[in-house]
Amino acid sequence: MKPKQMIIVLVVLFVVVIGGFILKYSNDAYGSILFSYDIEQVEKIELQNGNTGDLVSVTDKDEIAEIIGALNSFRYSTCAKEETMMGWSFSIIVHENDVEDDAGRIYISSDSSIKINDYEDPLLTNHYFSSTSDYFNKFIEKWLP
Image 1 (cartoon, one colour):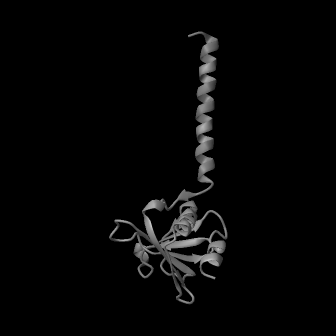
Image 2 (cartoon, one colour; image 1 turned 60 degrees about the horizontal axis):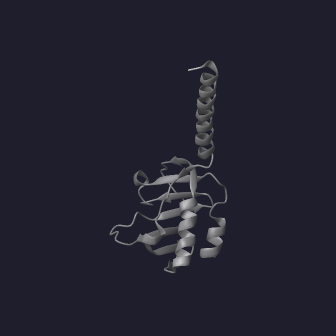
Image 3 (cartoon, helix red, strand yellow; image 1 turned 180 degrees about the horizontal axis):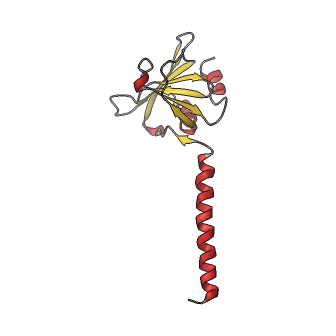
């Protein structure tokens, strides 16, 4: 291989490697994916207000698509196990077709943090913190005013 071709190959490899690092770490800035629901598999979503106990059952496909879009777009920056949780703003249960046991209740404890699964047992519950502040504010205002 000629020296000029060798230099071109090395430059291309260098650009690919550096580009890969930039792409990887720029994606990490947006946080990790938590949900990957298939809209076509969701038959119903139940939303419950943690303050009033009001329960909303959503079966309209357009509304389901909007809610699933918001959940699938949620990115978390940190995850922790916590011993206590002092209440929750609202919860979500996604009912999927052909799934006997739902994935668990999603507890929204603030505008940018959630817990999944068993609210009462901290050993079974993970607490996720959004990489975006105020993530759920508009969601709460629209679905559970």
